[in-house]
Amino acid sequence: MSSSPDLTFLQNLPIEIDGVSYPNDIADHLRIDRTDLEEEFTTQPERYAYYASMEAIAKDKRARLKHGLELLYAQLDSEKRKEAQVLQVQNPKFKYTEKMCENEVKGDKRYQDMLREHLEAERLSNLLGAWRNAMDHRREVLISLGAHDRTGNMSTRVLAEQAKNTLTQKANTEPPEEPKKASRRRPARAADGGN
Image (spheres, rainbow, N blue to C red):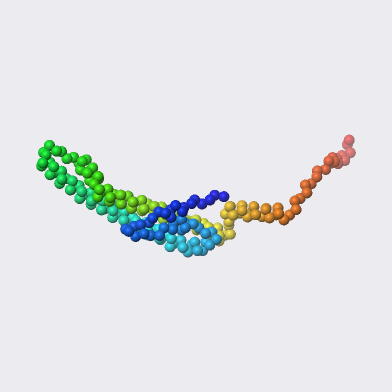
């Protein structure tokens, strides 16, 4: 029998967007209680909506940070070019290249801080997207389990377990059959009268 993967490590991943912490119960929400499919069907839309909403909020933050990063880049680029102009006035032999400007902008602490925040928002957005996809798969499994439940079909694993239990019960309740002894006598020959 295969065991389910341990998803408890996912519970330790924080869902924090714009300073607001949201509950993370993904491991519990993905688990399906086969003994209470009605409850599982009832809570599925709510759970899906939660993770889809969290993903949308995270995508929005990621987009805002990307826009902010582009604006900050433009502002820093302008600052660095003005500083370079001052240096060129002081030293006419100083040549300021595009690559120098780009490196100064990307090395600026303000840019680094916003880039780090953007990358974290992108990671959270991707993670929540994966969780929303997992909820899609969970829905498909529920539909399949519901169909099996309605038709009375059982999984191969359940049928094998029931067969094993039946055989075990029979073995414990019925006395073992005596093996039949084979006769050592030769079978009688049919009278053919021609011998």
